[in-house]
Length: 366
Image: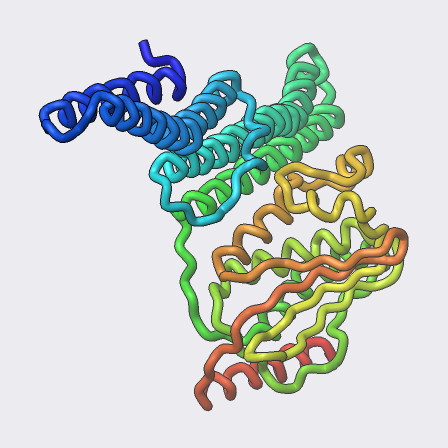
């Protein structure tokens, strides 16, 4: 077998020298010395040429390919840093480059799969825990009633209310999980339209005003908005986004106020929700949009919520080709903001929007 370039060069050089000598021996004018010299020269030249070609252009590259394949077989992808992007004409180098690229892609796929597997385990653990809490609570109340507490009307009513509250929380959690899943899989289609974002935020403030008042908090606009601000988006989903952001701000603010404002820049309308709450540590800012992630799990449990609000916000805005930005300082508050394209409006739309705003001002004044 031909194991290396020296053996290949030696065999080919011998064959070429023999053929050359045999051919020249047919020429009467060539003497024996000439045949010997010609044979030696052809042998040496062929040997050097074949050795250089096979050693540096074939066997070396094949050896590199084998090293790469061997490392891939052992799941060692450290070699991917060795590759370079230079353009080469040697087909073996190109093959080696393709194998490098394959190794890089394979390494990325394996890393992504590892991350997805870790995420899946964490997600299942979180879902199990979140579902278990309201189920166990309702189960405990019902079993207590079955064990005889139902005879006392006062206790029965109290425990049934608590069981109903736990089941309501379970229903909210399931609905949020379904919403998140449908957004990710594209089952929920965004219905884009032109609408007045000021009215949308005003509706959210009205809905959450009582919740804020129970904590002695104030929700307000950063300034009076007499004119409508139109955006082009899914009105229902953006209402959900603002609702989740303002509700979160109330949840994590113990004193002060929640301020909502708008800024128009570069054909975009930026909506910002600012609070004076506990803030978010810098190391947690990248994870707050993950499902069920909570900065302080114990406090978050006390404050309620499904832990999916910000994840839903993130996915809705991504479906709008936008994203939510966060600025936060611990014990000073946070600012959540996002941008939407400016919408177009007709005179009739603007007039209707102004009437709605005037009615809201009158109701607030009354």
